Each structure stands twice: as C-alpha cells, then as structure tokens.
Image 1 (spheres, one colour):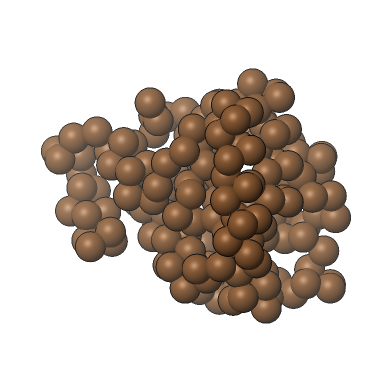
Image 2 (cartoon, helix red, strand yellow):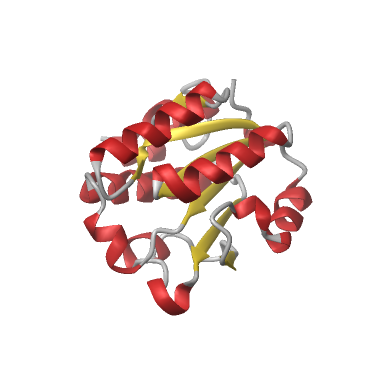
Length: 179
C-alpha cells in the first residue's frame, strides 16, 4: 500500500511533439497533471526527466505549469536509473515506493521500471498516465512491467490510496482534481 512518507513520483519524458501524438495523449497529459498536482498537495517529492531535449524538445507546458520546483534531469539513456544524477536524486529522498508515469511505455518507462524493480524499489505504474505512439506498444509496456512485479494503478486510485481517509487536510482539494 502506498504511504505518503515512503513515496516519490517519477515523471518520464513528456516532451515536445511526441507528448501530443502518443495514444490517448489528451487524457494521459490530463492524468499526469492531476497526479502532479495531487502529489504536491500531499507534499510528496517528485522528479522529472527529459530524454535528449536538444533533439526531442523540452517538457510540454501542460506538465511544467504544475511542476514548479520539481527537478528536471536530462538523460540520453532510455532508463532514468542509468543516469547518475537521477539515482542520486532518488536516493536523497530516502523513499522506496515509486509512482511512475510518462512516455513511452514500452521504452523509457519500461526500462526505468525494470531497473527500479531490480534495485528493490516498490514500483507503481500509473497506467492512465503512461502511453506510447501505438496502443499495442503502450499495452506491451504495461504488461511487461506487471510481469516483472510492478503494481498497476491509476491516477485516482493512487491518490486515494495515499490519502487513506476523508479526514486528511487535502481530501477536498484532491477530490476536486479528479472530478
């Protein structure tokens, strides 16, 4: 079960034109926005990555408008975990549960999930906030993460799992986000 004190959000490569042409792009971007806003309300740390931004462009405005203060790590490797800066940042949070969202599900998201699981992180893949250019590759990426031991969740499910109770001070604000 996700715990506020043990969770970190990793937002992978919502960049440039690719972010707008992936399968279900509009809903995936909307869910990523909701997830980032909810995580901030819960005071959970987050980290974002950009895959070779010189070629692919930077993180799209729909994501950056909600992610002030979230560190952005540039990378060339497909797995975020292959980047020393990412590993150091993640380690500095001292949290073992990772909520993972981003694109593309069958490349960078999948390879990041694989490496996080191999290093004993408890991985939660936010399936309504991940995508690929084709539905088949999106589904294949999700399937492979699940087969490796990743836990599938959704934006709303993860946020409510973290809150646990309606008495939490941010319940109304998060409830309004997911409506």
